[in-house]
Amino acid sequence: MDQFLTTWHEAAMTTAGLFWMALWAFGFGYLISSMIQVFVTRERMKQTMGQEGPKAIGLGTFFGFLSSSCSFAALATTRSLFAKGAGFVASLAFLLASTNLVVELGIIIAVFLGWQFVVGEYVGGILLILITWLIVRLTGAFGLVKKARERAREMEGSDDDSEVPDWKKLIKSREGWRKVAQRYVMEWGMVWKDVTVGFTVAGIIAAFVPREFFETLFIGAGEEDPAFWQVLAQSVVGPVAAFFTFIGSMGNIPLAAVLYSNGVAFAGIMAFIFSDLVVLPVLRIQAKYYGWPMALYIAGVFLIALVATALLLHYAFAGLGMMPDSTGGQSVTDREFFKVDYTLFLNLAFLALSAVFLWWKGKTAGFGNPVGGDMTEKVLFGLAVIAYLWLAGGLVIAPLLGA
Image (cartoon, rainbow, N blue to C red):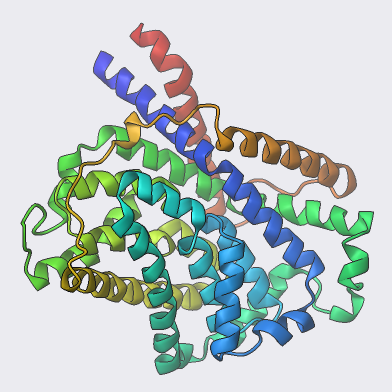
């Protein structure tokens, strides 16, 4: 019993710590998304990202790099760009770049995994975009783009650009920032249940599931020179492992280090890291934005692209003599989450901003139904409530009972 209480507390602390690491990134991403939705007109976006050629895709990649954020926030920003008229592939390029070509992600990868994985992350991010572009060109997105854009525009609100004031005037006005505050709170309202459940499950798995479980998922792990089929199997299993531990790329890096220290191949690790956009919480949000057919199509494209990218990186690094040696990894549950560093100050800043925006929206527009209308949202709401009870018990009750 004492062991269970100790592990329960560890799981709750891990969940809280991982969310603390990602909090400022959530706030930053949703702030950018809200500003795009309010200040950027559809016509202006069409002029920059409205085509599917190299220039538009390059711009999407560049804008994604500038607005680097966690997966959930990047999804909201991508929907905004797509609804405003950005090209489909350019929008996907933005999404992939904002979750893979990320400075802070590279720093964490360097700390936990080494420079080879940093190079793999950035080179792989470009490869993901190029392979995604190729797949979409070959399939034509099966004619789903038009309907998906219409659905995304419905979620953006007003469809009449003539009613939107000039962005230079709007960005200087109180009304413009009131709209930003309203959108910011609405974005949080759309995904808070998914985020709560996802982070809680990640903490539970990190604390209760032994490392051996993950090792058995990757065929050929620990072998010095695995066969091609074993490398391929590990590249496919990477997204499966990420599905069960999903908290976004930033939180998955310590888990990736654990897997690698136990002999998982370079390709399997890279596939695991790249898989933050092909898991259930992301799929649900994509379905909410574009409908299930497009959500499943995007997930399928990303899955094929990330497996191909992981294999290309693995054998390219092997051919160049750059394949990293296993150096060991730090367990997620052993990480020191709460300390005085840049994360603390950024989190305090975005907590203050969120409080102001929440107060402003409540005062001027009120709040909607936090539960949601359909059955799926109601089930998620119930799971989120259970998650909060679990976390409260693990943080407060478990230490008291185990004392």
